[in-house]
Length: 619
Image (tube, rainbow, N blue to C red; front, top):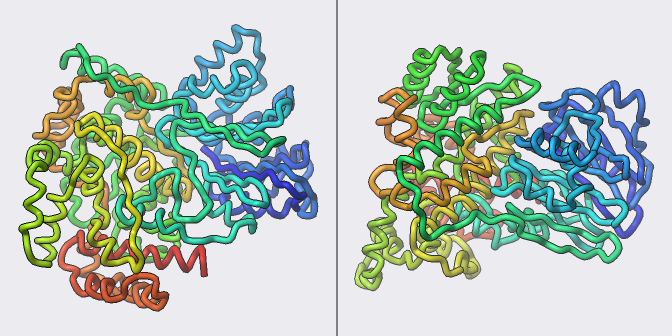
């Protein structure tokens, strides 16, 4: 797990630019640093001693039109042989962020073809695989990744991102050239793009709690979409995009429930076994719910020394007791980390700014990964992805009801009044298609709230025609909720503290298999995750199975009610925002004076984090 950045410019640029870009993502890789500049490899201040012994430091006054920067978090092959940018005998160069879980199998294929390796890293497997199969190697990769590969002989750069977007890759292109990085803050440090607000991206952010790829909240800065690679020709300066993967959809399936349970269980076990491989200790984050509890138990069966931890905060007694019971019954060494409002407030502004866009909540994963960092853990098992894969979100339980009542949409015109309640009723009846229903369940602002807030007419978002069935909803969840929201938050939360998350529910084989299972086995509209529950029954304590789903979130609304410091923080930033006169201030004041329940606070917090974002990246 790492971070990288780079540029290809029409004009000769100083090395100071790549040094600043790389410094901005130092948190992603404190273990090593490297550069490829003007056709040569260079060390940095934080390079491993073995690298410093063989490579000279990159001078600030050097110049080039092509540059690669890299920060390394050492997980597999901790030696200097895993150093990046990695250069092959053919003088091709790669910078890679992620983990390839099947790299040993791919390496074996290449060795049969006569390919030699000098390291034990998955990075080299991608590099050598490209030299044998070209971009076809991307489809063979099972894992989480983004990479940038310079093909010297063809004078091209290949950018790629994993199938469901677990690892990020951002870029911008203008008259200065092409710049890319693992985080937006690195791109801004180039000094070659003036940050400007992309209002369509902001609107998407307010509705979906995140900005849907390829958009970002910055004009001209884009996110490479999941399952996509692009080839940039350095001679013609042209892009070609290729969608190499889409989750397969099968309208008819003969898979029985018994077969589905058996095969899904086998695939989860295989993923757990495969993802336990690391040259550093692995710990499991056990929230107390079904998803993380199941993978923790299965991981313990494969690795007896596995440890687990749980975050504890006010009103999290059920989760903590469930995690403690699981640990006791399975002989898992378990730690509970207690979090309170003081822990949140001390670095609140810094943590908000780190996310590079507004957000609807306080991110609990920052505290989880800080705990891991303080205790020397680099690799963390996560249960994320199960909700999207198996139908876990509670708003989805309304899906079948909505498909029946949507024929009565005309009734919304007869519901009068402008109270919040009547607006919500009209909003629910106005959900004309699946995208509307999906948007309504994301916890962001409603369209009528967007109209009240924006001074200009908002653009229409999500107007594509999509079938109204669970399979289509499943694809929306995987590509929007997972890739652009949860995976993006996970990556930034983990890498801020130099930690790697791993996802046993998100392997290639498991995603493809689940997508083929008949809808009535995967989703019944009565209980969330019916298929996964049948597997979990064999391993998970009964009280975990019956616990109401809460999500891994802090009691933000309660802290707001009880802590004056948090209320002052909100008031201060809303007053600052109103001075900008970019939103309807009367709407902000109305919302500010009507915080009676958690969803009222959510949209206010999106505005607060918007203001922090403004101060950090624009002022």
